Amino acid sequence: MNTPLRKLSMLQVLACGAAIVTLSMGIRHGFGLWLQPITQDMGWTRQSFALALAIQNLSWGVIGVFMGMAADRFGAFRVLVSCAVLYGLGLAGMALSPTPTLFALTAGVLIGAAQAGTTYAVIYGVLGRQIAPEKRSWAMGVAAAAGSFGQFLMVPAEGFLIASLGWQAALLVLALMVLLIVPLALGLREPGFKGAEPVQRDQTIAQALAEAFQLPSFWLLTAGYFVCGFQVVFIGVHMPSYLRDHGLSAQVGSQALALIGLFNVLGTYFAGSLGQRMPKRHILVFIYAARAVVISIFLAVPLSPLSVYVFSAVIGALWLSTVPPTNALIAQIFGVQHLSMLGGFVFFSHQMGSFMGVWLGGYVYDRMGSYDMVWYLAIGLGVLAALVNLPIHEHSLRRTASQPA
Image (cartoon, rainbow, N blue to C red; front, top):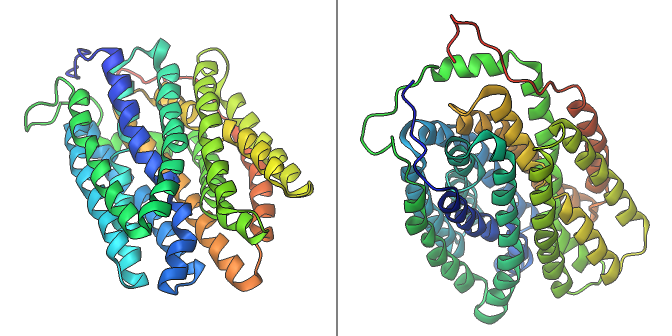
């Protein structure tokens, strides 16, 4: 079987992969800080802004499948470089768009496509191929923790840039900053993907997809990930405005998002580490159920800066902690040959949930003047996601001699 040889050091793969995720996800997590400055300055509704970010998540999910295919076939390096350039162009376009339509095309379609090629699906494909199975879940936890650290690092920086330079200039600074992904991608240039010819594989894309689509556990995992996207993006985009609506300062919203990122460093790392020692579906069941409980308590207690910070710390520990066990399960069940592509399909469901969470938040607020209905929906979906992850079977597929491996 002709597959890329393991010649990249684990330290190199983790350092470069983590730095790329830090930049890409860190910038993305701060987009909620732009909601009020842009809508107030441009005279747009919150639904217009939310629709653009909903399109961004949908674009990320749809294009992510094809970015995963390209990364599996031709290597992550080319995908990372091209999508870093797209990211910069999208951020610049987001700053200069004069109408909601152009804003949706740049902040939505363009940045979504860029994120598809600079985040987890592509990075996890490299980790899966270059790191031994006994350390794979742990390594994915480290990469996810890096994305969380990016949120802790970048969200306050983005808030500072907006306050110091204005929202347009702040976006142009980020457009230059995201191009640092290009030199970092050199560290993920895998042996076996150097030439123009793709690496030969024992299983075609069509065979890998047919195999996955016939397995109930694949669909259960996919359904649970929809809920993850709904909850995380609704909270990340709309919570700063929710807090402002209830009389809290913009600083509280910025600090809340930073706290989510800080505590998610711990949550994702421990989720990845636990995935080496206990059933991954049990980790996912706990995370989704705990989210429902934490959101319920947050809505029940009086809103204050202290309650916001406590909520942010606890929900932060559960924020992206679904990512390592979900992707490790895909690798464990199906192998790593088409890991980026299959991870992209599961992530598409996550982004469908993200689309619904961010758009529904804006839609409900514009019509009801409150986010309450969406908060309650997030609680119910958390319970549902915990239930659908229970029956997942984690054993590796046993293929016969006549089946592709």
